[in-house]
Amino acid sequence: MSKRTIIPFGPQHPVLPEPIHLDLVLEDEKVVEAIPKIGFIHRGLERLVEKKDFLDFVYVAERICGICSFIHGLTYCVALEQIMKIEVPPRSQYLRTIWSELSRIHSHLMWLGLIADAFGFESLFMHCWRLRENILDIIEETTGGRVIFGSAKIGGVRKDIAEDKLAEIVAKLGIYEREIREITNVFIKDSSVKHRLVGVGVLTKDEVYKLGAVGPTLRASGVAMDMRKLGYAAYNKINFEPIVETSGDSYSRCQVRIRELFQSIDIIRQCVSKIEEGPIEAAVTGLPNGEFFARTEQPRGEVIYYAKADGTRFLKRLRVRTPTFANLPALIKMLKGCELADVPVLVLTIDPCISCTER
Amino acid sequence: MIEEQKIIKILVGDLPKKSEEFYCGGFRLAQICCAQLDEGWELSYSFDNNFEFVSLRFFVNSIESVIPSISHIYWSSFIYENEIADLFGLKFKDIAIDYKGSFYRTQVKQPFSRPKQKKPEAK
Image 1 (tube, each protein chain N blue to C red):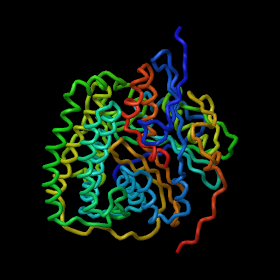
Image 2: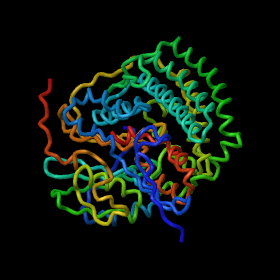
Image 3: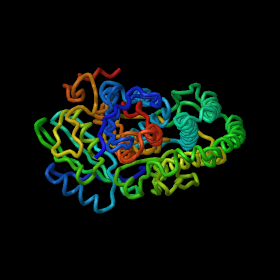
Image 4: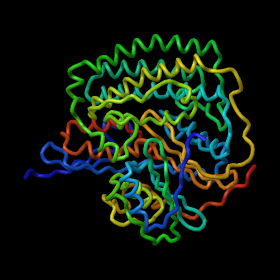
């Protein structure tokens, strides 16, 4: 029997932008067990809801994550709107969809850059992040912020996008789409990229489903589950199907995210062609009383906001189940049996967002 | 309403049996949530199968109550159970991977179990 060694991985590690710790049990170079630990930056924001007015808490929800900030705010709003039975105007539903998809594009481009950096393809990393800047510019032009949009509110959105601006966004996305295709072709075709991703960290369809994984991690193993199909925001008026791959390896997880980039651009085009004139917010009257589990699709997968209200301005409980948290068991399974050198890449393939997880 | 959501109230002792029924029915474990109410702790175990979202709910009124782990049915439940144990101080029996309070490295132990702060006056 080989000698067993325990290697501490993280919370500070060159490949980890945020702190998570893994105890890796090795036999020679092979990982036989991985035990994660989190909580290094736990903020307890869920508890803050008990002393923050439910209308103001949208700002806190947006600050749970710096990447999918808008979708956090949106999901919180969806939970409260369902409890309070607020009819959100159609125009704001389309605007919510557009900002959600812009978030997905910039998140996936950021991830592509990070994974390229993890396997040492520096120029690819820089190109991905250069393209991501273009998307952040659109977000800044339409919301005023690059990280925190501040545009979600209960009952609608705070800001409108003028018709000429929407046309300009579509025109710009046409240019960026060509550039993104050029860069993502490297991920799909380059032999050095394939060498690091193909057949690494395989999870079967049955395994990944039973592990409760979500998002691209789940869809890369052949499960067609995408919370956008629930029809929140304007997704019930958009034609799209979940992006699914079947190999269940790191390459498939990468392919799903690449194909979702183009799907998001298509969804934005559909939104711009279908968006209706009208108000962007509905009046919020009364106080919330009831409970709801709001589910939306973030770039990393399904996020669940459970809100429980008792008819006062302060919620009884807000619980946020983030996609990274749900993907941790899948990460443990995929690390088992891998080579030590593949650990950084495998950790990145679930696109971990510890900021969300440490809400 | 975006989706119909069903909540089934059960007793804590029925949790493993009911969870097994969901497992056999092809449901995945979507989340486990604990809410500290005035009278005790309310736990909700949510399962999903092709957008059918069902939650099992039970109530425990003592911090000393021991909740059976469902990690022998849904292995992934161990992260939720450890989270609730670390944040609220509730006890779970037979968790597949029991961190014994070290899953969350928080400076304040069981930060969500502290007495609730007084709600501020509404403006």
